[in-house]
Image 1 (cartoon, rainbow, N blue to C red):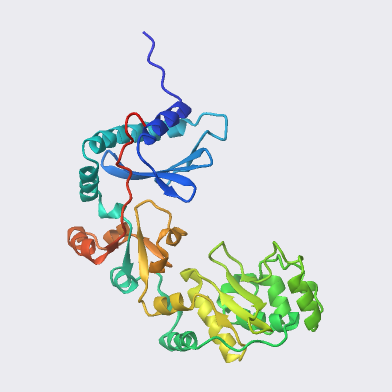
Image 2: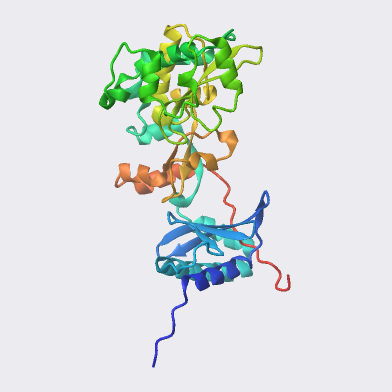
Length: 371
């Protein structure tokens, strides 16, 4: 007797989506979204399904999202077991939700481990439990922190009447010399001209800035207003990723003239950015520091840190939190438990009440059978 054929991943994907569509979705702009918390043995997985312009995107755990209709033509055997497990979990959830959707959600939140929830915790509390996490105090001494807070408490400086490439490169010279350790392995030398530092260490896509007449305000204005710099990164003076680089950008001042802005959001570059700000201030070069309120709160340990579910990505997780919390950094709750072995039960009790938990939107209401 031949064994029963095993469904392909495309068929399992279609079967899974057929069950998903039995639930009422919520709307995110023009998208339809379903969210589930599915039990897989002793573990839980957060599965989200989004329909965008007729295509479904299924995301769960740290695996790559599954699309349907599949953009490729081949089968993906490694997804088969995952889809089989999700199908089983979704069938169990459907049976529970059909009986009592409100009660099913209440039971789910009661059973769901705290490590699978999203919430916010005061940075000072995080530091008390994870002293080695993002040690800003080791990058900046108390005197430096006091000085940068004084800068943050000031208003923005007056406009700069004229801007030239040479003036911008003078800013760059101060900015590079503020953090020699950053460029230690790249042959950093003191005393170079700002243009030379920029050529060595900036992003490289200067959009024609290096070719300008250095002392001509007219040349700078023409270049700034032209299409030449579009698509380039002339202001990225410290290289990095989408949120881990440092920009020193020139812009039009609302009152006429120009302004210079120092901009780096990531806390991984907060120390370097603060040292640049201190150096620019000492050199009496007027500038604005972006993310002023966020920096102020982070340095005083008064901001909210995001708590993300176990297995979630950390780098861009701050973007998923409501704007009013002004989250800049995130952790997984498991990090705290791992740092305090043997105290999980006590910590669980404390954190359950200390963390402000975000609402959990779970798909639990089913469509009418005839809908």
